[in-house]
Structure formats: C-alpha cells, structure tokens
Length: 401
Image (cartoon, rainbow, N blue to C red; front, top):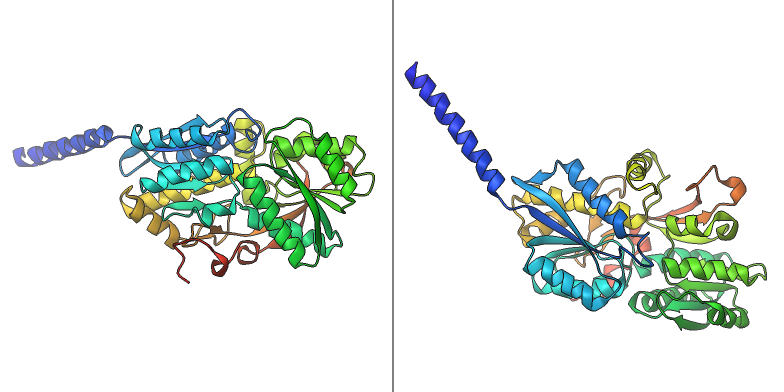
C-alpha cells in the first residue's frame, strides 16, 4: 500500500510540476499593426483586433503550453511609424507573428522589418501587388486581396459589359498607383481605353477638382483607385455633382461592406465591386458574422474575416509544427489547405499569395434590400487561379521559373 501511495504521490507531484512549468512559459504574442483612427479604421482597425481575439479564443487560448496574447498598435498611416512599431514588437516585445498592417505603404515598411528578422507577417488589409512581387519574402503571406485580383475581377466585368473607356481617380501612394496600373492593364488588354488619370492626396476631403477632370474626360467609367474614407467621399461627391446622373459610371476598385453602409444604397446602388468575402454568402459566413456583430455592432469586412482565418491557420500550424520557429511554421502553413468560412481549398503559394475564390457583386437598390447590411447581389464567383496573378507572371525572387 505504501508503494502504491508513493507512486500516486510522485505522479501528482510530476503533474503539478508540469502545470507549473507550463504556466512559467512566456506568452505567445501576435501583433497587429492597424489603422485604429483614420480612413481605414472601419475596414481593419478595432474590428481586426477583435477578429484576432475571437480566433485565439476559439482556438482555446493557448498553444504548446503557452497562453496566446493579442497585441495591437495604431500606425496612423505613417510608413516610418509602422516600421518602428514592427521593430519594437519583434525586437523588444517578443512578438512571433504580425497580422493585418492595414495600408500598403505601411505594410511594405513593416514587411521589410519582419523579413530582416525572419518572422512571419500576414497581410489582410493592404492591397499592393508588390507585397507578393518585388517585396515578397520567405515568411510573408498576402491573405485577402490584392490590386491585381481587384482589377482583374472588376475591370474585366466592366469592359465586357460595354464600359470600355476609363478615367482614374488615384490615391497618391503605393496602393493607389498599383491599383490604377493593374486595372489599366486589364482595360486595355480587354479592348478598352484609358483616357487619363489624376492623383489625389491620401485622406482628402475635397474631390471637386478631381471629379471635374474625370467628368470632362467623358470616360464611361470613373475608376476609383483608392479605399476607405477616400472611396466614400468620392462616391458621395460624384452623386452631389450629378456625375452619375449624367451617364458616367463610378467604379470603386476596392470597396467594403462598411463603405457601402456609410454611403447608403440610394447613392451606391448599381456599383460593381470585387470582394473576397461577404457576410451573407452561406451559413458559415452568416454564423461567423453574427458572432462578430454581437461584439462590434457591425458586419465584418473581408479584411477582418481574413484576420480571423489567417490567425487560426497560423495557430494550427504552430501546434502541428510543435514550435514557433518561422521556417517550420510557414512550411506547415503552405502545405496545409485552408478550409473554413473564409476560403474553400485555399492555398498559400511559394510567393506568399493565398489563392482563394473572389466574388463580383452589384450593390442592391434600396427596394431590393431587406435591411441594413443587406447590400450585395452576387453576380459571379471567380476561381482563385483566374482572379490572381499567375506564378508565371510573378516578379517574386523566390519563385522558380
């Protein structure tokens, strides 16, 4: 009996020691670099932080005996600040993975810091195609959308429907420039013409002079190569100036459900737009979106839904690899298909592009909507290998030709 009791006592001590050791392990930290207060705050911002926390909670809150901690910081849409935040997170705060990073210029800056430190960085909010071309890295993942995919889905559909002459209003930074360039290529390749473009400052409130130039061009389509607050203001002011009533069509080349909610269906009806996700696509998207809305009082954008999906995929890979070592984790992430409410049979390629279906939507008329957030009619589902740039076209140094 003494021998049995001794064995039980020893086992209990071992279990207690193991639990104490697990508690002593440092937290696994993931860090979001977000626009928390400016023109992209609704697209990413606090909603992206919430999505990351939901992913961690649903995963169980810990991995490899380490509690998972979600950090977030506001980059104020400044590339130098984004780089400094990334540097501090990775060098001083012990962050293992960076998520989202919102805008393209800030993403490019943070991406270089992560690349130099061999750390995983996953982009959900930025769009520049450069992130998987010239600026690609072995631990860089572009998860949700990019300028090539947006241009390919929206521009192609518009030109095929007869909207074959374009003038661009372009945000004057990396994302806007790439979006104009990629859409122009689609338009001309499909037989359309680009009649001109004008660049506007980021986060401007007055689009009058830019819209007058677009109106004077007599182009059938005014392509908005911008996002967030800039897209909202441009569409509202185009309606105020009577541009759309005059026969020209405004095409937002990157718009989110939160943008349409801000603009209102009366003004936004009939807009064509490409999205990677919509809350009302199926039972799975509705289930996640309902939970998200209970916390935020808003439906998730594709960027925020992508944060949940990408953080979950990362944590599963950490568990499978048995380590947080970036090389081991990224290997599992690229080998493992992504099947959840965001993507079916999604795959991360060698250039870091996550390939998944894209969707072409038309914004509903007010009479067609059943209520707030019921904004889109699905026109087409575009397979990922058709929507995104092919590996043969890639300018990423990691891609074997």
